[in-house]
Image (cartoon, rainbow, N blue to C red; front, top):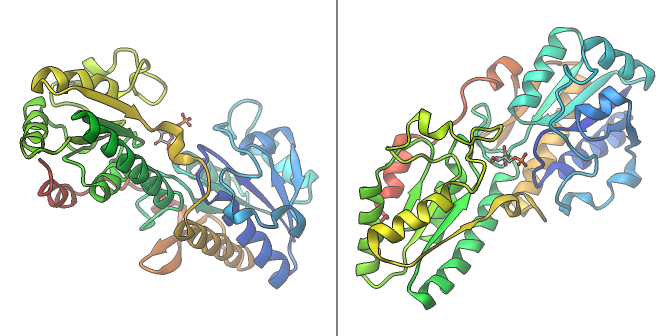
Length: 341
Ligand code: F6P
């Protein structure tokens, strides 16, 4: 049996560990063969492959990025479609596919599975917003990088008696902001799930400053002030609905400076959060997910995604996996907010 593997969507530390876990268990325990499709669904549409043997996967679990490359190509557009996918799989003698990706990838995988393609999914997103799994690999790494960066921002902020704003990833959810902000002792954490007023932010910043602290404000890229209605945020949006020129951190810093009189600087952490070596937690989680995907393949259980529940790896249907996004619950935010100001 030959298994194709692809990584699709934004990259994420831990992708290589999934590939290694799957290939090692698949070849050594079950005698499976593997082929890699390059750059996500693009490689499957263009028939662009690479070998995946023990040689290619040697020592890769500590490497960031993905040895297969990735893209945001949708298998149903740009010359794709069910027939094309089936044709390329047949040409390569591929019996089943392991698709590693986020919501978009899993939605495409579900459509293909419904059309008869044998697929097992592995969830991937630094944002940690897939509801069927307790954690996604890459999240821990992103939080660690963001926390380290904030520790650094605090020492320079302290020296200059400035307010420091750190903009972190999180288009729709504030998990990275919540965890890194809590770990770094932020004086305010602003997330997409909770619209907040400038008056409230000003109060938190002033209160920290009055105690002799240099305020640290952590903001997720998808955050909106309570005065930002949809019409406001529709101006100059990118494909994900984010402001095209400068993010929310660039918008907030001058507003905070104006409201408080405290010199304020924004740092947008951006793709730094997705780059480099995965943490040991992410390597272990990713490896276990990759190995568990093989269990589904061997059992011929298609249309299922591997997921973390507590400390166990479980298998859920694509339907269940594609439920609502996992947002930060109000109680979790209110708990963190006790530490603000
Ligand atoms: O979905 C993960 C994510 O990292 C988001 O937090 C971020 O908004 C987006 O991807 C960035 O995407 P790109 O790499 O395409 O700019």
